[in-house]
Length: 166
Image (cartoon, rainbow, N blue to C red; front, side, top):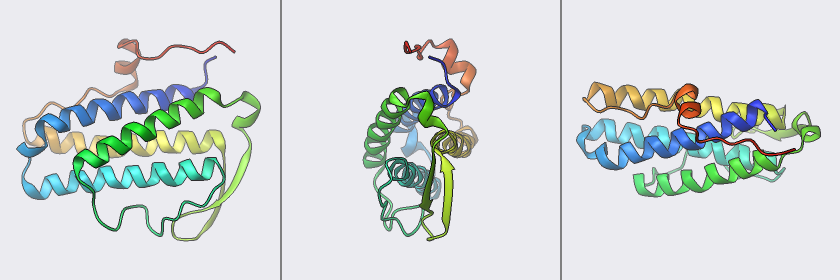
């Protein structure tokens, strides 16, 4: 069954894993301040992913800001991102059509109340990460490093997504 949120979540997993593979081989080639910026961006994406993961299952996330108090190592961030991306892909695959438009009330990390549908949350997570992957790609390119080709067209061309029977 095709749904936009499923495609975007699977593409996010593929793109995140690809970016992290490039970074694993090249992060040390960046100046120290840019290595730190990359880790800050990855940490922020991970925090937002974890916050919305909790929102989707309607549990408290415990974050007071959309980032960690201390920036984890790249290896720790990549491991957490892989686990979280797998969780999101499984969640999106299991989400029934009648659940996509279910509205959930939650609080942002600053305590501000909000509500979104499950589908909106999945799209937010996918689009939020895409923007920050673009920032990291720019830092890589600036330093002569080819980023992961993470466009949706690259994902579809790579044949990394299969439909799930309804």
